[in-house]
Length: 241
Ligand SMILES: NC(=O)c1ccc[n+]([C@@H]2O[C@H](COP(=O)([O-])OP(=O)(O)OC[C@H]3O[C@@H](n4cnc5c(N)ncnc54)[C@H](OP(=O)(O)O)[C@@H]3O)[C@@H](O)[C@H]2O)c1
Image (tube, rainbow, N blue to C red; front, side, top):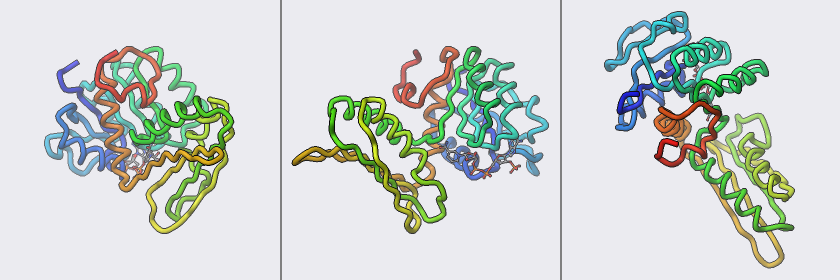
């Protein structure tokens, strides 16, 4: 592995791909060596980075980790390439089917893999804090209030359910409330209530770039690790395990 992990961005022309490329340019802990979109790119090299269409994926240069924010249709060839090259995979692509999820788990025997529905590092920390608080507050009420913009259709949010699982894993029974208002990017309040006292843990997302910077952070720390499935929380530190 080179000193700075070499990153392939998959889904490079999309909203997340563009954010990844913009944010990666300011980072010292990794560098982008290839950008792949679904359709063949109009421009072959941008800011020194070679661009490829999905059908040209096999021609991508050597990379240490692929970051994938694309669509399920592009997932299988990328996973196969990562295995063939012995490279890590960080994927935030949603809508994977059961076969793809099984393939991801199987790949973890050969390469280091991260898949997450939320790449905010703050949410990963909040999840850990919720589990730790729930473990020492048996019998307390646990309520999760999530707020999002009016275009969000699902409720409670997937993140709220993940936080609820963290509390339920320690024996509490979480209850949920959802607010849909204006352009709220995403807020999650987890409150633990007893008689005469209450603890509140809250995360507020104000910018969607947090998902891209979280994925870059995780990718920089996944490079060089041994094969297995990692959670974001496993990669919050800096040491190679
Ligand atoms: N986990 C998280 O924290 C998180 C956060 C935000 C979004 N997401 C997920 O990330 C994914 C991308 O979101 P987005 O908003 O960036 O979507 P988007 O703007 O629609 O971009 C999709 C990207 O995927 C590319 N693509 C499509 N088919 C492909 C294929 N067969 N092979 C390779 N690339 C292909 C597209 O290329 P063309 O432009 O050439 O078609 C485009 O670059 C979605 O699954 C979304 O749900 C996850």
